[in-house]
Length: 357
Image (cartoon, rainbow, N blue to C red; front, side, top):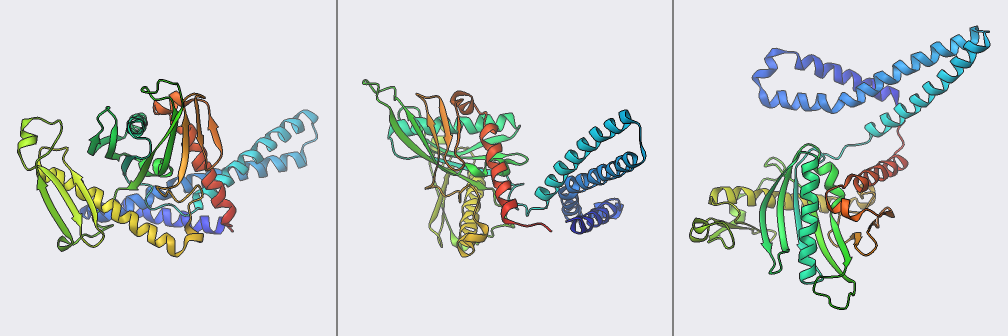
């Protein structure tokens, strides 16, 4: 492992030297690429240097123990040595995690799609609850949430909503949320007090850049129409809404939230690229499924991942068997107690399946 780390450190030093060259600023695209690569290695190199420092202290303390005869000094040195060895183990574990292959999409923003499933009106109300949960979580992380399209239900819920969540690490934190979310509660319209079960589907897609997915103009059919719903007189009387159909795949994206047709088209293309990238990733995973399968599920929209039980104040993530009795705070956006264990489990499984020499 340490031979590989030495190579990483050498690469980090080369990138540092390149960044210090004023001529690099003239090529902004190259500068950003080098800066990103340098930043990616920063944590790894920092841990490596801390590990070396701890190793040096362990050697010094071991030598002191071999030479010292004073019982009090020996006792203190032994206590310090035990602490240092524990610290070394923690740093070594962190280094192994940092050496695991990175998900290239972790840096990306998120296209979030939520759709009501079984359960009628109750499902649309739950879809609204879950969207609000993600929006509040985004606020706590200082991410920006922008609605691309939404279709409200007659009872104030959401039949469907598509939103863009922008911020550092958005996809790395939310990527495990794809799948079926199920709710068990007594609907307001239920007179007998019976618990009903409803479900929604959530898709978390990495926002695709133009360089990720190239879309030929000939493959698109773009239709414009009058927007419906709230937005003012000008929205409802101009052809600002956009529907884009990707002819080779049949994917259809609509956007009508903006008054500008140009802005609606740009938003719709963002969603289309992300959906096409998801297709490409899925097809690639199908080819090498056993090697690239996600440790906590494939993120398939048909996979039941979580149940929110209101009578028992309980949230259960079925993939890792995690149960928390704090439903209210989770729906208020406190998602870290679920997301952190999912990430830890994934990293643990990755370490089991990948020996790092």
